[in-house]
Length: 142
Ligand SMILES: [Zn+2]
Image: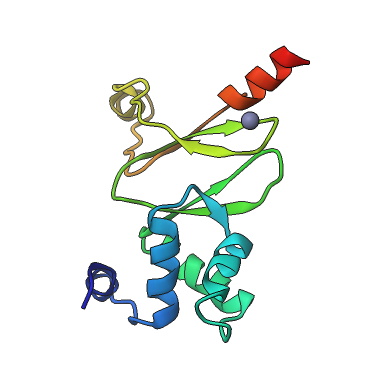
């Protein structure tokens, strides 16, 4: 049994081949849509349908194994392997690439939310919008 199978068992999800394949694809991937996941797993199992992939991504996201993000520019839901951490993304407005960012913004805002709003933060999802290195260089050349 590999670690994904153990993870599914821990979350009381059935250990299906589809779920393990989806997790393998997303483990090393930037956030991608269900269609992108489907295209990546289709090479390995042609019997999987897009709706199966979509349903499984949703089930995994509900358990917090995947995190969901929606970009303002296209409104599509993208999935990412959650790695058990808070998620921060930088999204390029020119090429739509999504980067996971390894910074901790405003470390005390959870406490501030609790004090000012009496709101207990259990998870967070922060997105930064702007232009990536490649797009900025392209802009300079033109
Ligand atoms: Zn870009």
